[in-house]
Length: 166
Image (cartoon, rainbow, N blue to C red):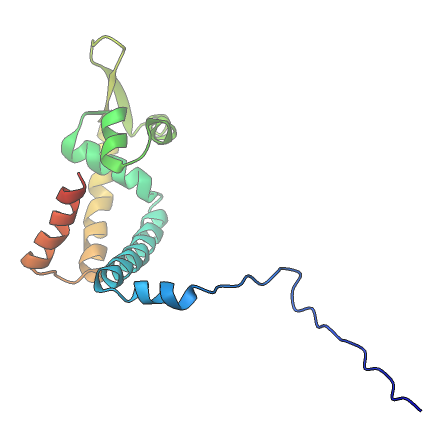
């Protein structure tokens, strides 16, 4: 009598196909470069600090985007929407919604400049200035608690990266 053939059994772990990664070890070595480790650490730290500060600002009814716009207008304003977008590295279209909300909340006002093309400047209202003056000190306290004091040499190195890319 012939032995019975064993049936082939396949266990399906997932309905998704497993992708082969033949270059993974080679690419992992790239991640070990000191510059790349610096970048990954910097980005990871930025994301963690950003989330913590954003959560705290949200408890004060202020998104980080709203905070950044109020910050720019308070310290550098009045500014055009294009100037704000450029300083925040976003498109003019992305800024429009935020500016409309700030104006609807009576935190900012649009001022005509009289220039051709109808360019307007965005300025804080009294309410906007008071709101920002209320939320900035506790925000600075949170930053002070979260961030270490970086050496002047390290800060110079970081600024050099910015200058190099401009």
